[in-house]
Length: 187
Image (cartoon, rainbow, N blue to C red; front, side, top):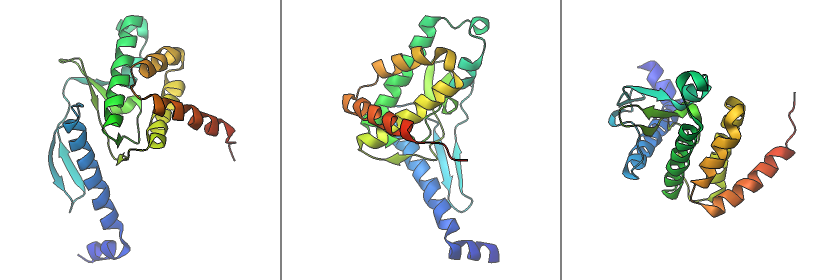
Protein backbone atom coordinates (compact mmCIF):
# COMPACT_ATOMS: atom_id res chain seq x y z
CA UNK A 1 0.00 0.00 0.00
CA UNK A 2 2.91 2.33 0.67
CA UNK A 3 4.10 1.92 -2.94
CA UNK A 4 0.63 2.79 -4.26
CA UNK A 5 0.52 5.93 -2.11
CA UNK A 6 3.94 7.08 -3.36
CA UNK A 7 2.86 6.50 -6.98
CA UNK A 8 -0.30 8.50 -6.43
CA UNK A 9 1.66 11.33 -4.81
CA UNK A 10 4.15 11.39 -7.69
CA UNK A 11 1.33 11.45 -10.22
CA UNK A 12 2.61 8.33 -11.97
CA UNK A 13 -0.47 6.25 -11.29
CA UNK A 14 -2.72 9.03 -12.50
CA UNK A 15 -0.69 9.31 -15.73
CA UNK A 16 -0.96 5.56 -16.35
CA UNK A 17 -4.70 5.63 -15.67
CA UNK A 18 -5.14 8.47 -18.15
CA UNK A 19 -3.13 6.63 -20.82
CA UNK A 20 -5.04 3.38 -20.33
CA UNK A 21 -8.37 5.21 -20.42
CA UNK A 22 -7.34 7.09 -23.58
CA UNK A 23 -6.35 3.85 -25.32
CA UNK A 24 -9.66 2.26 -24.35
CA UNK A 25 -11.60 5.28 -25.67
CA UNK A 26 -9.65 5.20 -28.92
CA UNK A 27 -10.32 1.50 -29.49
CA UNK A 28 -14.03 2.08 -28.89
CA UNK A 29 -14.09 5.11 -31.18
CA UNK A 30 -12.25 3.16 -33.88
CA UNK A 31 -14.83 0.38 -33.75
CA UNK A 32 -17.70 2.91 -33.82
CA UNK A 33 -16.17 4.35 -36.99
CA UNK A 34 -16.44 0.88 -38.53
CA UNK A 35 -12.70 0.25 -38.46
CA UNK A 36 -11.76 -3.24 -37.31
CA UNK A 37 -9.90 -3.18 -33.98
CA UNK A 38 -9.73 -5.68 -31.12
CA UNK A 39 -12.89 -6.03 -29.04
CA UNK A 40 -12.33 -4.48 -25.62
CA UNK A 41 -13.61 -6.72 -22.82
CA UNK A 42 -12.69 -4.70 -19.74
CA UNK A 43 -10.50 -1.93 -18.39
CA UNK A 44 -8.70 -2.36 -15.05
CA UNK A 45 -7.35 1.04 -14.05
CA UNK A 46 -6.04 -0.25 -10.72
CA UNK A 47 -3.73 -2.71 -12.48
CA UNK A 48 -3.30 -0.56 -15.60
CA UNK A 49 -4.55 -3.28 -17.90
CA UNK A 50 -6.82 -3.59 -20.87
CA UNK A 51 -8.40 -6.96 -21.54
CA UNK A 52 -9.18 -7.37 -25.20
CA UNK A 53 -9.70 -9.84 -27.97
CA UNK A 54 -6.74 -11.87 -29.18
CA UNK A 55 -6.98 -11.56 -32.97
CA UNK A 56 -6.82 -15.24 -33.94
CA UNK A 57 -5.44 -16.47 -37.24
CA UNK A 58 -3.87 -13.13 -38.12
CA UNK A 59 -0.55 -11.91 -39.40
CA UNK A 60 1.15 -8.53 -39.06
CA UNK A 61 1.36 -6.56 -42.29
CA UNK A 62 5.06 -6.07 -41.51
CA UNK A 63 5.66 -9.83 -41.51
CA UNK A 64 3.77 -10.27 -44.77
CA UNK A 65 5.75 -7.52 -46.49
CA UNK A 66 9.11 -8.52 -44.97
CA UNK A 67 8.78 -12.06 -46.24
CA UNK A 68 10.18 -13.09 -49.58
CA UNK A 69 7.41 -11.83 -51.85
CA UNK A 70 7.87 -14.71 -54.30
CA UNK A 71 7.89 -17.32 -51.51
CA UNK A 72 4.62 -16.22 -49.94
CA UNK A 73 3.07 -15.62 -53.31
CA UNK A 74 2.28 -11.91 -53.01
CA UNK A 75 1.72 -10.55 -56.47
CA UNK A 76 1.84 -6.85 -57.33
CA UNK A 77 -1.96 -6.94 -57.43
CA UNK A 78 -2.10 -8.28 -53.85
CA UNK A 79 0.37 -5.62 -52.68
CA UNK A 80 -1.68 -2.84 -54.24
CA UNK A 81 -4.89 -4.29 -52.76
CA UNK A 82 -3.26 -4.34 -49.33
CA UNK A 83 -1.98 -0.77 -49.72
CA UNK A 84 -5.41 0.39 -50.92
CA UNK A 85 -6.99 -1.16 -47.81
CA UNK A 86 -4.45 0.66 -45.62
CA UNK A 87 -5.21 3.97 -47.36
CA UNK A 88 -8.98 3.57 -46.97
CA UNK A 89 -8.66 2.50 -43.32
CA UNK A 90 -6.36 5.36 -42.31
CA UNK A 91 -8.60 7.78 -44.20
CA UNK A 92 -11.66 6.61 -42.24
CA UNK A 93 -9.67 6.88 -39.01
CA UNK A 94 -8.69 10.47 -39.78
CA UNK A 95 -12.17 11.43 -41.02
CA UNK A 96 -13.33 10.43 -37.54
CA UNK A 97 -10.69 12.77 -36.06
CA UNK A 98 -8.75 9.89 -34.51
CA UNK A 99 -4.95 9.99 -34.70
CA UNK A 100 -3.31 6.60 -34.20
CA UNK A 101 0.05 8.00 -33.12
CA UNK A 102 2.03 4.90 -34.11
CA UNK A 103 0.90 3.97 -37.61
CA UNK A 104 3.35 1.26 -38.58
CA UNK A 105 2.98 -1.99 -40.44
CA UNK A 106 3.63 -3.74 -37.10
CA UNK A 107 0.40 -2.23 -35.76
CA UNK A 108 -1.73 -3.55 -38.60
CA UNK A 109 -2.93 -7.12 -38.87
CA UNK A 110 -4.65 -9.11 -41.55
CA UNK A 111 -7.34 -11.36 -40.17
CA UNK A 112 -6.93 -14.27 -42.56
CA UNK A 113 -10.42 -15.79 -42.41
CA UNK A 114 -12.08 -12.49 -43.35
CA UNK A 115 -9.14 -11.01 -45.28
CA UNK A 116 -9.68 -7.94 -43.08
CA UNK A 117 -7.25 -5.20 -42.02
CA UNK A 118 -7.26 -4.70 -38.23
CA UNK A 119 -5.56 -1.80 -36.42
CA UNK A 120 -3.95 -2.45 -33.04
CA UNK A 121 -1.94 -0.61 -30.35
CA UNK A 122 -3.69 2.68 -29.67
CA UNK A 123 -1.38 3.58 -26.79
CA UNK A 124 -0.23 6.83 -28.44
CA UNK A 125 -3.58 7.75 -29.97
CA UNK A 126 -5.37 11.04 -29.56
CA UNK A 127 -8.41 12.83 -30.86
CA UNK A 128 -7.70 15.74 -33.20
CA UNK A 129 -9.32 17.45 -36.14
CA UNK A 130 -6.10 19.23 -37.17
CA UNK A 131 -4.71 18.43 -40.62
CA UNK A 132 -1.23 18.81 -39.12
CA UNK A 133 -1.78 15.93 -36.69
CA UNK A 134 -3.20 13.74 -39.44
CA UNK A 135 -0.27 14.57 -41.72
CA UNK A 136 2.22 13.69 -38.98
CA UNK A 137 0.37 10.38 -38.50
CA UNK A 138 0.80 9.69 -42.23
CA UNK A 139 4.46 10.72 -42.03
CA UNK A 140 5.07 8.08 -39.35
CA UNK A 141 3.55 5.47 -41.68
CA UNK A 142 5.57 6.77 -44.63
CA UNK A 143 8.85 6.60 -42.72
CA UNK A 144 8.04 3.09 -41.50
CA UNK A 145 7.34 1.87 -45.03
CA UNK A 146 10.41 3.57 -46.51
CA UNK A 147 12.71 2.07 -43.89
CA UNK A 148 11.20 -1.39 -43.46
CA UNK A 149 9.84 -2.09 -46.94
CA UNK A 150 12.10 -0.03 -49.18
CA UNK A 151 11.94 -2.31 -52.22
CA UNK A 152 8.18 -1.86 -52.56
CA UNK A 153 7.77 1.48 -50.74
CA UNK A 154 6.96 3.50 -53.85
CA UNK A 155 4.17 1.10 -54.89
CA UNK A 156 2.77 0.89 -51.36
CA UNK A 157 2.78 4.62 -50.65
CA UNK A 158 1.40 5.52 -54.07
CA UNK A 159 -1.57 3.23 -53.56
CA UNK A 160 -2.09 4.30 -49.93
CA UNK A 161 -2.26 7.97 -50.93
CA UNK A 162 -4.50 7.22 -53.95
CA UNK A 163 -7.02 5.67 -51.53
CA UNK A 164 -6.66 8.27 -48.79
CA UNK A 165 -9.52 10.79 -48.90
CA UNK A 166 -8.18 14.03 -47.54
CA UNK A 167 -6.67 16.42 -50.06
CA UNK A 168 -5.90 19.07 -47.42
CA UNK A 169 -4.14 16.50 -45.22
CA UNK A 170 -2.00 15.32 -48.15
CA UNK A 171 -1.06 18.95 -48.93
CA UNK A 172 -0.09 19.38 -45.28
CA UNK A 173 1.94 16.17 -45.49
CA UNK A 174 4.08 17.81 -48.19
CA UNK A 175 4.81 20.66 -45.76
CA UNK A 176 5.61 18.21 -42.94
CA UNK A 177 8.03 16.37 -45.26
CA UNK A 178 9.84 19.61 -46.07
CA UNK A 179 10.25 20.42 -42.38
CA UNK A 180 11.48 16.89 -41.72
CA UNK A 181 14.19 17.13 -44.39
CA UNK A 182 15.56 20.36 -42.90
CA UNK A 183 16.32 18.67 -39.61
CA UNK A 184 19.92 17.61 -39.07
CA UNK A 185 20.80 14.61 -36.93
CA UNK A 186 22.77 15.40 -33.81
CA UNK A 187 25.19 12.98 -32.24
